[in-house]
Length: 277
Image (cartoon, rainbow, N blue to C red):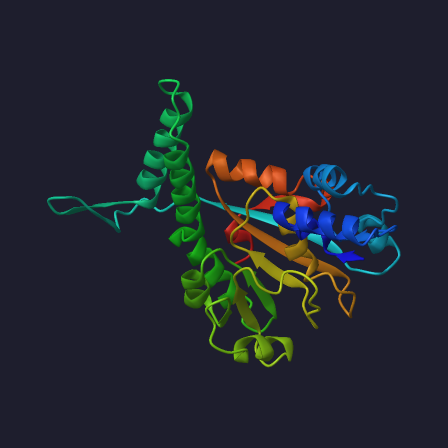
């Protein structure tokens, strides 16, 4: 039995296949709350697994197993103030998030559409740099802080992309945390806000939680669904309110479209920050 089979890496699939063949395992069952089309194809090709039973989010909501949900998307422009210092061979200069993003995007386009020879290492590094800029966007951080100030008496789980961003927002828990104190405080309802990075996304049940903020996401719908599900445990509340913070850049909006494609479009709406404050 493979729990959370969607999280298997290509190398783990190879190792698991060898294990199954060596021990002549006759029956293999994979379980997951989120399976994308790509993952379904990889599990079929790598392990011969096919979906034989499916219980959708909408069915679970109708049966009262989990809460209903509402996705609210807030778009914010990247910061245009020249606060980012860039070092050069002869000194340094200041630029903005928006200018840096535009430069990285133009360089990516040159690598993809340029002379016919693509430096894939440079292309990968450029894309990682652009994603890193989105992860630490001061515009996004400011929105999250404003929302947490508004909801100071409500329990809110915040998903971020960088440890330094998580530390800046509120009590945090991530791979660099030296202890479990902050996590335990939130799990025991001793504090209202916790920001996390690649932690507590699956297999964890949060009590008295019906609101979360996703300050960073990529195009992987499985990752987003796991985050959303943390606030959908059926308790006294009947609906989970999820707030996705996105820039207004086409690249990130493209990730957003892919990540939310399996969700009910009638439960997704775009709102302005002013509507909440």
